[in-house]
Length: 219
Image 1 (tube, helix red, strand yellow):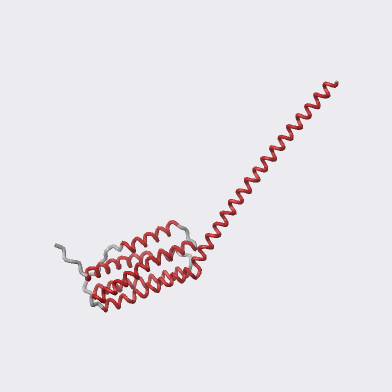
Image 2: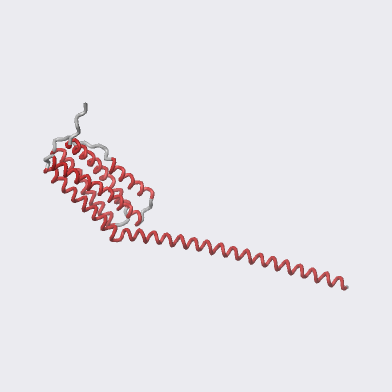
């Protein structure tokens, strides 16, 4: 018979889960930074990469503090967020709009981590591991700061730049449609002009023929 699941079991499994997620983010953040066009966004992502590497170290230390072997289990939540972000980068060219999408993906990850670390801190305290709770508290504050930084960048101009870029594309598309319409109207006008010219020519030829027959009869 399987033993009843304990809070320590859940705590250990959650540590394994988020350790896997943080290690995946260490691989994903450089790709996000490379895809960004905003220098400020690129710098923010690079700075958070250094923090994320420290988050991994803290989690490994947490395992030691609770006398557990450092190991991971697949973090389906962060893995899905990272995969979605990777797909967006692959499917779209570099642009202000892509910067906005990178921020959105980054904040999804941050919100997930904020929830996880908040839970881990509460469980650590309940289990009497105040030292682990204090360790994870630093990570939680850095995740919150990273989320706030992304919001700041979005509101400081990246979202507006993405909108302006879209407006410019719409205007170009409208100009292209107008040019096509002008060309079609010009072509139609040319055809009508040619038609009138042919009709006039035919009418003149008929008139000349009738006058010639009239002179022949009078003779």
